[in-house]
Image 1 (cartoon, one colour):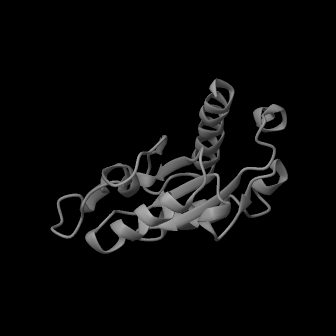
Image 2: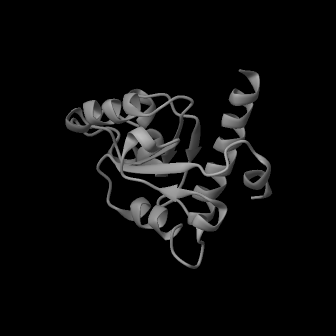
Image 3: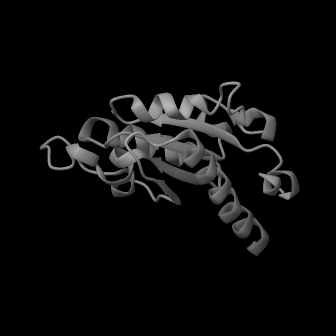
Length: 144
């Protein structure tokens, strides 16, 4: 996590969107905010407005009803932006990928920068994905 202290991104703001999961990955994502993991100590703040978010964390499968909402949230985020797909459902559609109402993983609708496998994904893996994504974001900022 020392990367966060030295990067240009001093305080990455994160928005979480659930496309329609069993809530296992949502619980693990929110666990990152609890005192046990406390990601806020690194300056990572959970926000509710996509216009304020640098990072979009998406859980659950994409279906025709939420695909447009996901796309709208992504388009409202300022650039550069980072998308993290969390859990088997967010990465590929999971066990529901063959269901008739499931489009698939998040990458079927918007570009994904980091994938976090697991069912559910562990909080440590989610935090590692944020750090990995921020390193990519730092590379983009330095290149421009």
